[in-house]
Length: 539
Image 1 (cartoon, one colour):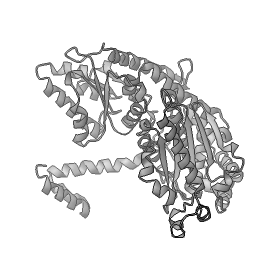
Image 2 (tube, rainbow, N blue to C red):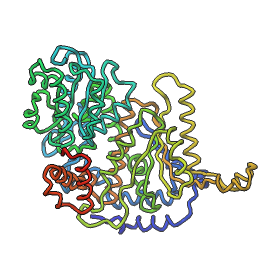
Image 3 (cartoon, rainbow, N blue to C red):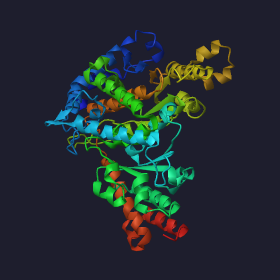
Image 4 (tube, rainbow, N blue to C red):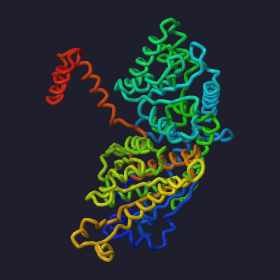
C-alpha cells in the first residue's frame, strides 16, 4: 500500500506549507476553484489557506494515494474493511428501487427494499393509530433505546427535521446507562401509549440491554393486570440481527427489523436503525432523505476530484491536520435544529479516523483524525468564539448555514445568517493594529482588540433544512471522512479502540460484588473502587 509521506505530492505540500499564506490576500484572488455545488448544498472553501499550488498538489495527493480507486472498490462491494474482512456498503441503503447493487451475484438492493417496505408498513400503522398498545390505545410516545450509531443518527435527524415530525407522537432517545436518562424519558410517558424501539445489532450491548430491561420492568409494573407477553409484544420492537436474543426478550420476530454486517453503526441512520426517524417524519419524507443521500453518493462516485465536494473537503482536512498542524475543527451550525449535528459528527469522524495504525499494521508517522466539536451559532459566539478569534490554538471551522427557514423569512433568520457570514469573515481576515488605529481607538486598547485572522473556514450553505438536504449534508461528511482515511492509508470502518475499555469495565463491575477482584487492577483504580464502595456500600 502507498505511504502518503512517500508520494511526491506530500513532499510538495510540506514545502508549500512553509510559506506565508495570509487569507486576507488570498481571498481577493480568483477563488472560483474553491467554490463547489452538489445536490442540496453549496460549499465555499475560499477561506481555506490554499492557493492554486496547494490546490493542485492536494489533487495530486488524491491521485497518488489512490483515493478514487478505493472509492470505486467501496461502491463495488470489495471488502475494504480489511481488519474485519467486510464490505462497506452503506451507500447500498440509499439506492432507488430501480437500481441494483450486486455483490458476488447477490442483489443487495432486494433485501434493502424489503426491510424498507416493512419499516414503511409499520411506521404507517403507528402514525395512523392502527398499531395500538395492549389496551387498544394509539401510540403517542416512541422511545428509541440504543447507543452510539444506534442513537446518534436517529436523535440528530429527529431534532433536525423538527418541522416534519408528526405532532401526534413525541419522541425520546435513551442511550446513557445512567438511570436518569431513561427516567427522564419515562416521566412524560403513558405506559398504555408508549412504544419502545430497542436498537442493538447483537442485542447484547450492555448499556442498551440494561435500559431495555429497565423499560420492560417499568411497563410491566405499570400494567400488572395484563398479560406480560402481550404487553411486550405490543410495546416493544427490535432493530437487530440476533433473533434468538430478541425472542428471549419477548419480542415477536415479526416485529424485528434487521440490517447487515456491511453497514457500520455510524453509517446506519437510514437502515432499520432509522425506524424511529421514519415514524417521526413519515415514509415519504424518509424517501426524500434517502434521495438526498443517494444524490450526494452519486456526486462523490462520478465527479472528478477537483469538482468533487466531499473529496476536496477531505483533502483540505488533511492539509489542515498534517501540513498546518491544526488539531481541531469546530462544527458551527447556524440552525437550532442542527444542535445535535456536531455530536453526530464526533462519532462519524473520530471513531472512523482516530487511528494510529495503517491498514498493513504499521504505525503511522503523520497525524490522522482531527478532533471535531461544536455548538450552534449564535450561542457559541457568546461562549467559545473568543478562543477561536484570539486564542493561541488555531481551530479550523465548518460553518453550516440554512438560507431559508421552513415558512416565511423572518428578521431573526436574516440576523442569524448575517452573524454566520460575519464570523466566517472575521475569523479568516481578522483586524490589524493599523486598521484599529485608523478607527481612532485608544492606543492602550489596540493590542487587546487585534484579531490575527488566518483561521481556515469552510462555509456550507443549504437552501432549507428538510429531509433531502439533511441526507446530502450527512453523506457529504461521510465521504469526506472516507477521503481522509484513504489518504492516510487507515481503515475508517473498524473501531477496536473502544473494546478494551468495555472489557475492563465489566471486570470492575464484578469487583463491586467480589472484593477479592479489586487487586487485579492498577493502584489508582483500586483506590477509586474502594472510594465508590465506601460511599455506596450496597454494591
